[in-house]
Image (cartoon, rainbow, N blue to C red; front, side, top):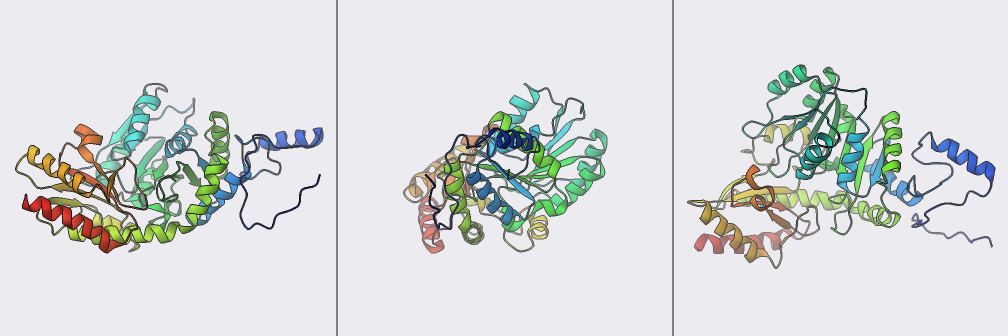
Length: 393
């Protein structure tokens, strides 16, 4: 029976595992064309290869990122695995260089998978005094000649803004590919592909989705060859996002720019407030003039904002007092601000830095705040009440 077309303005959820190919000729043509790894095939074959709902959601990311292609995966980590793995080649023996201030899950992947299981020659580049010394980076990359350089636009949790434009220029001069995790900045603040970066990664779980109710990752680029390699790798290892999550992501991403703009505004106001609170020892936020990378952030983001993350540390005569203040703060705000190990949610959430990162950031009073898009006055009222109580105790 012929199905009636439905006049819906949205791409439906195609939950098909496999798609009807009708006859042998169509089947042969579909599998022949599949080897070309087009972003959108003429005939869909199997949802691990490509799915129309997922492709439609990818087009929304392409619109926001301003890129030639985007490929969705089921998590930020699967996007990282895809982006890194397509540059691994048995004939390529040059080392890879990673900046140390990157997502902890990425560091664990490097150590457990890239080094331990795959035997890659991995090197790290470390910041000094809260920022990257590009003269030292130039010396290091000239010596190593790495095949690949991996950075984050804004680091987690110290919010170091990398001079992506200059880093990319130096890397390309030395024959290196560049991958950037742009999750914290998002394309609303900065589009790295415009400056020659090879691949941009996002944990779409965070600001693209923005509601804390799905996990997804995405890699974006302009090179057709890189796209084909990424499609092939995603297909073979099964990193495809589900059509249901792709549908939800596509609806949520419609409000991304409104949400993230509000989050950036809330964070900027909150950072200024925190900077005047006596019980807070230090605030890390790229929009503050005393942040080590404030000048770089102004150049890179061109006044569009400074992100929606804040890290701060409590005053205290010793670690015991700092830890006591941290724990009291978490308890006092817990009705409105939850301790949840993610970021980018609608409401402000927090994480105690020492409890998560351990000896890497040992300050016991340090808290990372992911600022939401709730009413700012209500948010500040909640925080002010807690901080006033801590100051009096």
